[in-house]
Image 1 (spheres, rainbow, N blue to C red):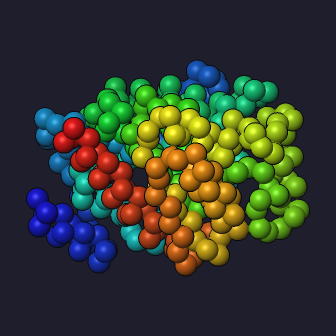
Image 2: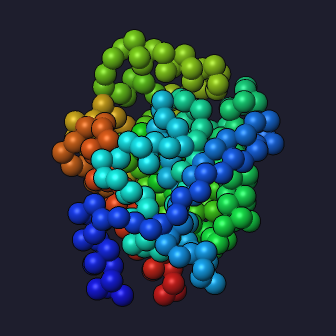
Length: 286
C-alpha cells in the first residue's frame, strides 16, 4: 500500500493523468430558498466498488465559486489526483461572496452554516458512497473558506474529525488585516449588513473563528492552520494560534514563504488532505 501511494504521489507531483470522476450537483437549500452547485470528486472505479469512502469538504474563498479548486489550481486535475491517492471523496461547495459561511441573524439569504451542515452533507451522504460518520469526514478551505472550515467544524463537532485552514480569515475584524483600507471598510460594511453590531474585541463574537477557541478545545477536532508570511491575513492566523496555545488546544500551525495566491494554495492543499487522511487512518486504529 505504501509503495502504491508513493507511486500515486510521484504521478501527482509530475502532473499525471487521473481517472477520478467529477460530478456537478445542485442542492436546494430550504433554509435560503435557493439552489447551490457543488462538485463531487470520486476516486477512480468507485462506482464499480462495493465500498464507502471518507469525505473532505474543500471550501473556496471570497469572490470564488464551486469550480475554483478545479479551475485556479496550478496543477491540472489536482483534486482528482488527491481523490485517487487517498481513496477519498472531495466536495467543493459554492456559496455567496463574503458570506464567511456563517448563518446571518438578519438575512434569510445568508444561512451557509446550515446549508453545509444540515443540507449539503446529508444530500452527499444519501447520493454518493461516503462513510456517514464524523470519524471519516473532514473540512478544509482557503481564505474565507478557511474561516468557514474552522467555524463550521467548531460549531458542528458531530460532523467532523479534522479541519484545516489555508490563509484563513481567522478574525473577520478588518483592523487585524494588512492591506487596502477602502477594501477593509467595504468588508466591514457587508459584515454589519449580515450580522448587525457584533463585538469585534475580546470576548470575540461567535461569528468569527477567534471567538470559538473554547469550542475548538472542547470538541477535540484535529486542526491544521497554515498561512504564508507575506499574506495580508498573517496576523489573524497568529492571533488564533496564540489563543489556542493560551487555552491548551492541540493544533498544528505552519508559517512558510508565500502570499495570498493560488500558487500557495496549490502547494497547501496536498498537505491538508494528507493531514486529514492521517487523522482518518488514526481513527481506524482506535
